[in-house]
Length: 80
Image 1 (cartoon, rainbow, N blue to C red):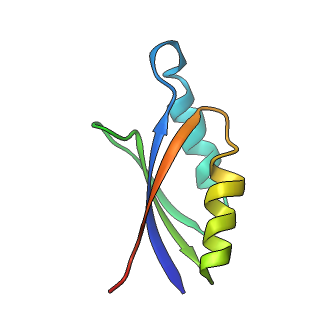
Image 2: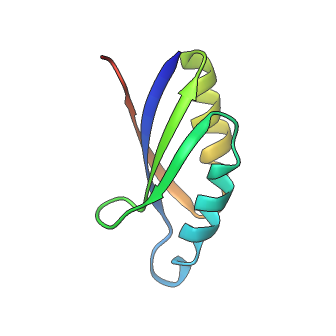
């Protein structure tokens, strides 16, 4: 089992409404355990559990980054 925390930046300026929509769509992805809206450098913090690094990569690269409004992600893979 691979566990990761993913920090997500969403659109800014006139695209602020993307954060709520992105949060709702990310929460529906299989493997996503929690999604938190936060204040600061990032807009969302996502807790993911996957069976392998390959599955984690697919969740982040193929699914999360494909959501409208998601501008970037930074992954923190739990090591211990």
